[in-house]
Length: 248
Ligand code: PEP
Image (tube, rainbow, N blue to C red; front, top):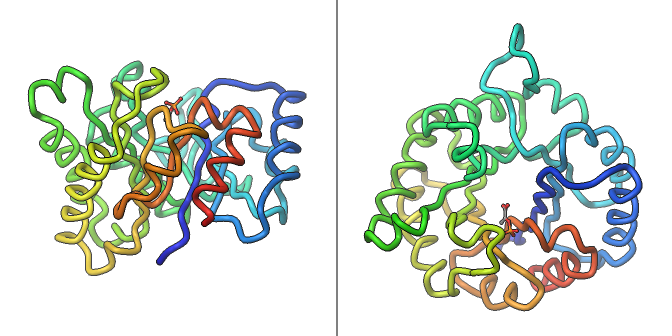
């Protein structure tokens, strides 16, 4: 069985002092044979966190990457720049970027491509809104979102990580039940299998109010290979409990 991956998404939270305290707490309790662990931090703190994590067994991630290689794109951060800071993972297509920044499936696919070509693993987020779930469209939505990424990156699709994040569960305290999450993960796994002979090795993470209390049950599902953790990644004790549940 492959090692699970637990990735924290700090979103737009933190400051120099808080980041240091949070990481010191996580590093001091990290189990010896931990699962893969990463923290996806605001760009402004990549250098700080890179320095603190060097050789410590936690990988560095970003929360986005530009779809452009370089040039006149004010405010954007390129994949090559992220690579300069030792970034291993880049979240792409988070629902907050789709919702607040109008990111389309095609743009998300290009961002994944930029990350891959710089040697960064994209964590591709897919997920349905509450209205889409209630309309019975969950499967269609997540398959459409993933299909765009497969279409653009088919040749190296086994190098991506997928995160199923139902929008209605993000930051709301409402979690998909283990059965609901597993059902969608199975759909995504089948889609990846149709695109790649190596789909079994792709990590499919669950994200959406995963916390210290519900992580073990979610992580026990066959096709749940880890978690993308928002709020609970900002508290070292909770993040460590989730890492512990994924390291068994
Ligand atoms: C996220 O932002 O990716 C996320 C899963 O957030 P939360 O855990 O807070 O729902």
